[in-house]
Image (cartoon, one colour):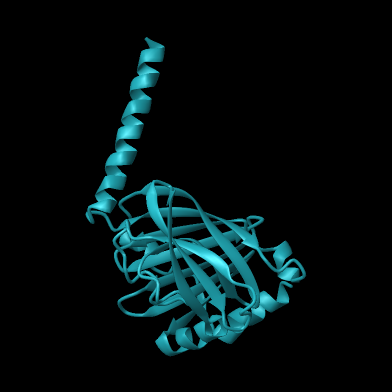
Length: 224
């Protein structure tokens, strides 16, 4: 009886997973959570010792929140709205809770530091049940060091990259690189959970002190 119950439980779990994924493919769902493995690509950078190894992307329609943490003491998050085209960058370190606001001009200025050229290869593979497409990205500052990225159109968020250096890619990134605070990191999707999310998780807590973006960068520099 216990074995039968266990088998039935697993079958229901599998049915729920594939039904939820099917909703994404049909364009019915535009919210959920993607987990990423994170690797620092600058071993000589002192910040690599503090860099996170995991990241969580929560998304709902035009809102998103990317959260990362290290050693349970240092946490940082990017909260964005693709329609309003602005982002909040938060930093938590022990008793310090600060944030800055970035609007489109500041975002574009920051993205210019990581300009990329893209070339689609036509190759595909399956990542977390989604059909992913390969693109070769070449940094303008390092044209001899191209790298591959993978994205999917199965999650119906074509403007998900409007605020990052991958704005030409009309799909959700599943494997990619990013450079922030003079540190380059790679992100590889490792888990996906379709879930209804409350709008409140995309709101800033009142306990945060507003500072400038240069102040936030100074915090990262002090941690190196």
